[in-house]
Amino acid sequence: YLVAGHGRCGQCGLAMHSQPVTKIRNGKRGKTRLYYRCPSFNSAKYTRACNLPYFNAGAVDRAVWAAVRVYLTDPAMLGDGLRRYAEERERADAPLRQQAAVVAHLIQEQEAKRGRLLDLYLSGGFDRPALDEQRGRIERVLGDLKRRQAELERELSRQLTATDITSLQAMIATVGERVNAAEGNFQLQRRILDRLGVVVTFASEEGERTLYLTGGIGEVGGISLSQGGKAP
Image (tube, rainbow, N blue to C red; front, side, top):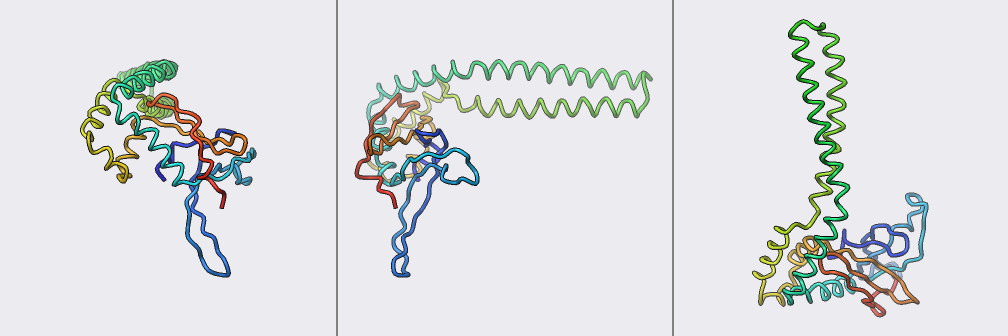
């Protein structure tokens, strides 16, 4: 599943799931086929439902890689797309960076408060039970703040930086003439999709299974899978 973790349903917005399907005929197991499907069919977990059909995983993976490969063989197009994506992420992540700055400041305040508390105890300002009670309160607040700080750092780490762009371009340059060999290199293809931040939106338009790609490659739409997504 090359696109696993990169797909979302164009109808309800849920992350697409990968699913193997094996037909059984006359008591005999047939060939197992791989599909992507919207998880909204699971009514026990999701209250919303949509009628997005199954998508043949092989057809999806081939189409997505073919679109991404265009950028691998055109350095100028890749560079422009990556820079646009980085700029968009910079704007989108501004509120997160502001939150991170506020959380870092609050952590500093709580740690300073903890230090003053210990100084007061050592100078005889209050007894040990009072120290333990107030220190415990501070530690709980610090724990919450540091967990939030870690969450923000994880979210911000997904941003494509100038260093990432240079690294990715260098990686692709290294691949160079071996791009054709990457057709069968699943790990390399996955790594490239991850670094480009590719998001694949699955849609069904007038009976046609269609893919829309966004991310570091810019926007690619209208990739039809009319023959590649027959439901099991």
